Image 1 (cartoon, rainbow, N blue to C red):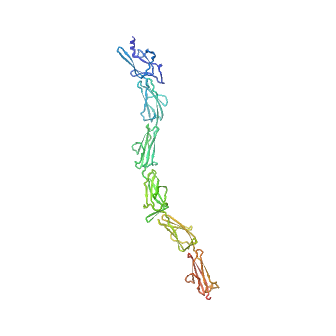
Image 2 (tube, rainbow, N blue to C red; image 1 turned 60 degrees about the horizontal axis):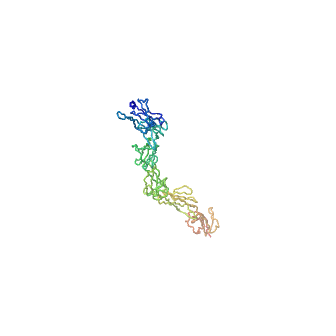
Image 3 (tube, rainbow, N blue to C red; image 1 turned 90 degrees about the horizontal axis):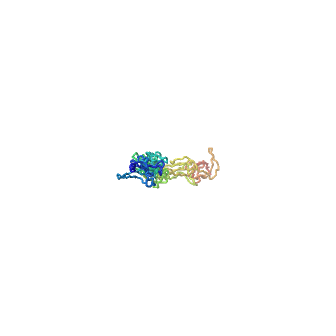
Length: 569
């Protein structure tokens, strides 16, 4: 009877959870027993178990099974996995199993994202529309729910995906609970959402002026991003974009305008807005023009310039503009050209070397100009030799040059290189005149003559001299060897009377240069040089004596004297 009852109720053996015997509870979660798909129990390993037996499927009026050692209750299943109870069916001599599962293993939860991301030092970096999917696995009882908390907020049940649509910092805590109440130890991931695109800095290496580059220039692209730069792309002149890996040379581009377009991607695929840089590749060096400015003159097919002439160098550039010009004269060191260069330090034949550099350092080929090139003149630094000459009466004494108004002044200039061009002179403070022919000075007294000679390249030599113009003749005096002893009257004219043997003495004195000669004529007879007392006058008549005295400059004084000679002694 008893055995028949047991046979009848064994199929309805139940494992009943006693809430009073739960060893540990997590807030909001409870260890429990469930039935799997085959209606076999799945027991949380933390639940104490007591076996009951009943004769009905509902377990009503069940009877607790007492083991031989009652203190071994309740049962604790420590090993997770599949377990079974067996019942020997004697008639069949066969063990009938009753299966159940013990689950003491918590779920294992992980995460993934199908959006671009970057992990650095345990931090996840994501971009726009970044979402995280949580996925959990539990081998025994299966996952019931996944819970998550963002930035320490209340936990929520994970349903689809976590969309982190705001830029910023996120701490995500998550765990899973299986179907028998095993709670996974919470995990944490740190995520930074970056919506900011990279910023690319363009830098020109080597030559640059504004947006003008030389063949030596290179373009450097460097991008910055808090997440990290993934790639930089660029294209030139609408060519297909390529990944930037090194500085971009421009020497293979033709001279002219070009456009560089570029952008960067960060490691979460934030894309920088397309940027453009328009530039001009300048491969042409400046063109140089050299010229001599100032006085130039061609004589016998040879060109001359003066020391006041200047070397002027002009350079023009098609695009960037001229930065510097350098020159060398007669193989000296190159010097920076800043302004026209006086050639006063270089005499004779010269050669000139020049080159120019534009603002992107394109350098013109050095050019050398020799004397045999007609536009490089012979540099004449020597002024004319000058002198003067007095033509006609002159005498120098007492540190003074004396001339007369009949004397001619000749100004002399000689230039053995470019040749004499002109002589100008000024008498005292008078008007400057060009010397054309010897001239006289008609005004007596001291005079200063300042004169300058110019050659054909305007080299000049200046000098001056002083002279005295004497226009006054000597003062004439006469004396008779015997005093007059009577007065003879004729035609209302009175004449001193002298005897036939009288002698006439003449003398002359010149205040400036001294008297030179005295001439006389008696009664309109031929003039004679006075060199002794005059005798032989005509007796019994009036004698007319014409006297002419000259000084050292041929200035002369004429004097007439008349007297009566008696006809008896």
